[in-house]
Length: 204
Image (tube, rainbow, N blue to C red; front, side, top):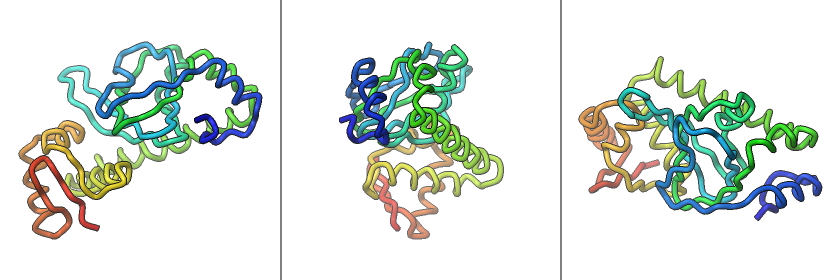
């Protein structure tokens, strides 16, 4: 499956084959725990990963971004380079195949121009996404945050219908379930969504 990755350097690909292994994660399975020592960096081959920031005090989570095929996690990369512990939680969003890159390879492969460019592009992309999250939290009403969240989940799932509870959404948007339920009912009245039992259809 390495032929799906955005690398053409045969030596680099050979290094990946020799040093990395692939692993399958089922939907909802935790890939990286918050507070864990990073021993590998996940590079998505298929499926997607949802990255969350976890509150140390109460365990509540805030959704940050998705990692799509041929992408990796900037937070995990940063932990590798600083020898720190994970500040995020990574969860498989649907069945997901991951190339597990050993942490010590991240800097060693900087000798390859493609890898170096890939890492820099990853930081740039994630930085822009995190700024968007901050803007939504700081400057937008919860209804805009909720709509953006649903749009992101639908984009990743490749279907307008999400199997998800109001409590799950509330947990990831760091708010109360009652507030999410109220906003979803308002969105349904406006014709933006269609609500079912543990199911939300985003109407485009």
